[in-house]
Image 1 (tube, one colour):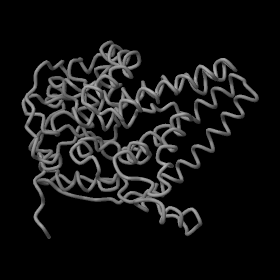
Image 2 (image 1 turned 90 degrees about the vertical axis):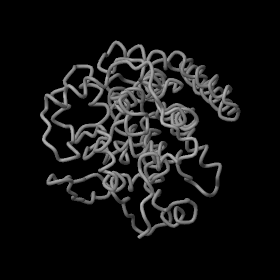
Image 3 (image 1 turned 45 degrees about the horizontal axis):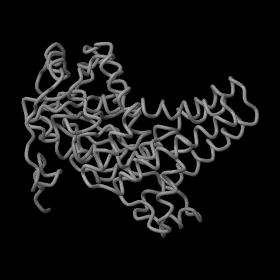
Image 4 (image 1 turned 30 degrees about the horizontal axis):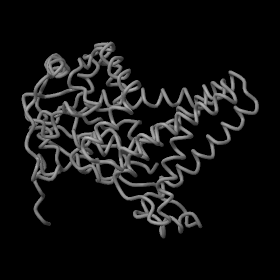
Length: 372
């Protein structure tokens, strides 16, 4: 990825330096770059094309080697390669589902999703779950992946959360989409997920060991990882405020994860403006720092959502408090921050929702900036 731009800002007397990437990588002029300029809606997304080609090639070669020369040591190496490549691939799909990707040929958009799902175990219905349900319901009770009813510093609660998703997620999502009359989405969920499972069963009938490592394990592990990430993203709920977008999610800045996963840590900003290009998320956070501070939003530095979840399960609030960013620049002891964090992980049964029927998401708490 491109070297991050260092941006300094001050709120009161406390500077905040952002080291997350604010530009896409640059590439030499080549046939591939020229194709991207012609065929992509946004030429900045060439990084996604290159990631798709390199990761697909790596996984295809790894699959061939594993199938042809199976050994458990080779299987372990396969899992390491898969584990390294999967996070940026998932977040690439996340970015391309929120913004138009390939202009022509358009069928490549669907083929891209299916190929990444097959190679990495990513849900075929990822977009339908994320855009068709999660962003609509915004972690409230109707959200099938809502964290509200669980105690977010309990690993046992998380196990109940993830097991429900693994065992009933496809059925729940299909039923939800049918209730909402999103019929095309419901068909893609049902047929796509059944087809994915059918492929796993077919490969298992040929070679159970190969299918276990290359298909069944990634299928389960990706879903576990995605729910673990969502758990951390929506762990702290500030029910003293209406759910206006700042009070039910967190932001993680200046992390290695952001540099590998296209600024995924800026989760509040993403929920408020889902189609904002990933390189603009740090500046969006800077522009609206005062709104975050006034809402007492949760922002951590040098951690990611997965580490947040782990720290919660081990009740390591002390470390979380040290990584908590005091956005308003006012003194706040670690003990005070710990008490605040602990108060926001309790199960929530009722929560007022700020009306957004006529208000665009990015104007809920971020008023339009005056023209310059």
